[in-house]
Length: 325
Image (cartoon, rainbow, N blue to C red; front, side):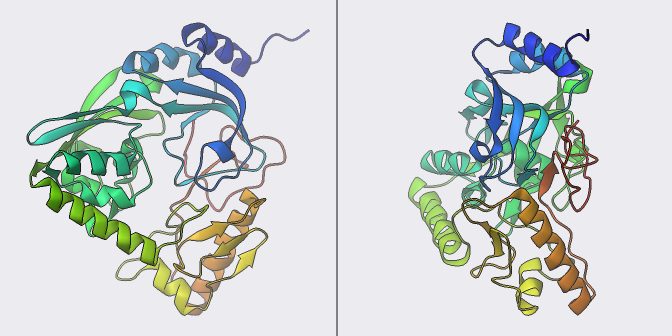
């Protein structure tokens, strides 16, 4: 007779330290902007830095990933045989000062933009057009409308789940922020981040936000998508290349290249993660064949063959990025 698996042991420990905040078999359709993907074996909601330290020892032998707002996450149809972590409560809070604000890693970027603007603090308006979290912005050096996280980030507090969940203060320079990348490892959770702001009339801040929202509605599709699928190659944009190859509207199963913005892939009801992968590969192949430029996905795959947390039958994604542990 076999004993409990490492995952079963981890769940028992998690339920003991965080009663009521551990769920099993939670569909990633509830957790990602693509609204597809199989279930997470376990979902844990963390409300404070103490929670992060409490759970660290329970995850030593099981795969885990931080979900954030799920805006660049693609989970295999077979799901993720590990622990998904969501940040809420104090980990999604906001403290505002005269020239800096400190935001929890789970805070939605549009909320950060709107709340600081309403308080007459400028510098973070560009975040209103990015449907991610503060933690995701730090990890990926998220940007838009001519600005990037590295320009406004002062420091971040990172909990290393591989090191017992202890907090470490990191300067922006130490995170080695580049185009859609940072030096953060998969076991690091952004608990809080400090951003530089300055004073400005709230009406002017909100007018800038309104303009960004208008531009977004005019140029980017709504519905089920994960924003930009590919990073931009040097000196060009992925959207222009895909459009120039006549690929708007190209469909694989329930997923198609958006007619409004070619670097967005739209998922219809009933679409599968496998459809997204197949469309990524097909667009990548056609663009490279026509232009010689190989596009690189910025989507974060999880639960695919070869990755921690994959289930039997899961296919490979386009690449293995070390997105989870």
